[in-house]
Image 1 (tube, one colour):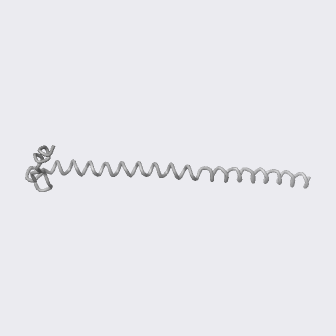
Image 2 (cartoon, helix red, strand yellow):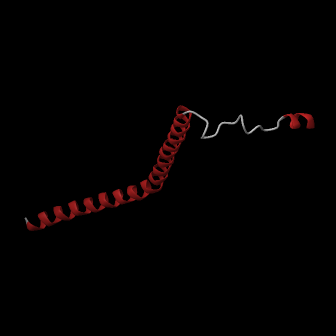
Image 3 (cartoon, helix red, strand yellow):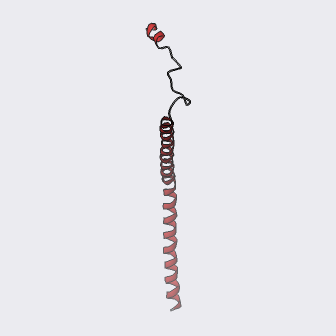
Length: 86
């Protein structure tokens, strides 16, 4: 087991760094990193908007019911006022 670890000596000369790779490799890595970042931001925004909708829909539903109730009360009051004036 230790022999295998000794055989895995890292030779720094064979590893690529930014100074000895071609421009295409740099472009591919930067494109992949940018695409992953953009995709991650889309996923984050979708999750955030879904959570915001989950929290705010009950509030807007109760507000809609309140507005409907008030509009029905206004309609009843206007009918009563018209009947009294006749």
